[in-house]
Length: 168
Image (cartoon, rainbow, N blue to C red; front, side, top):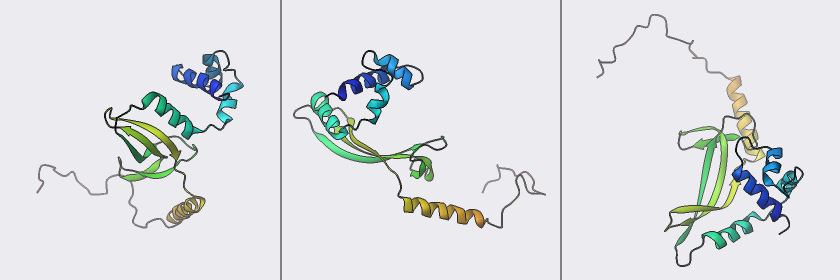
C-alpha cells in the first residue's frame, strides 16, 4: 500500500494536467505528497501490474452474469521520432509495408454487453539481438550493391505529355 499512495497522486496529476508533462509539473499538480523527488521514486518502483489490473477490473468493471472474452492483439504505432527505445521496422497492416514504429502486444478483457475492451497486459515487442544484427547486415549489403539501372531524376529526355483520355 505504501508505494501506491504516491503512485495514485501522480497518476491523478497526470490525468488532470494540461500542457507539457514534466517532472516539475507533475510534482506541482500532485499536491501534498507528490514532491519533486517522489516522481522519479515512483517511476523506479516495481509495481505488480498484473495484480493491479486484476484488482481494478474486479472492483470497478466486473458485472456478475455478464459475458467476458479474453483477446490478444499486436498494434504498431508509427513514429516520426529519431531514436526512442524499441523503434524498429514493423509491418503495419494499415500501410501494407514495413516502416519504423513501436509495436505492443496487448492482452485484454472484452465485455460483450458494453462492447468495451479493458487491457490486462501490455508489453512492447522488441526484436532479439540476432534479428537486429541480421537486418543491419542485410541493409549494409544493399547499400554496397546499388542497382545499376537507376535513372536520373525528372522526365526522361524526349518524353512528351500523354493524353490520359485515350485509355484502352
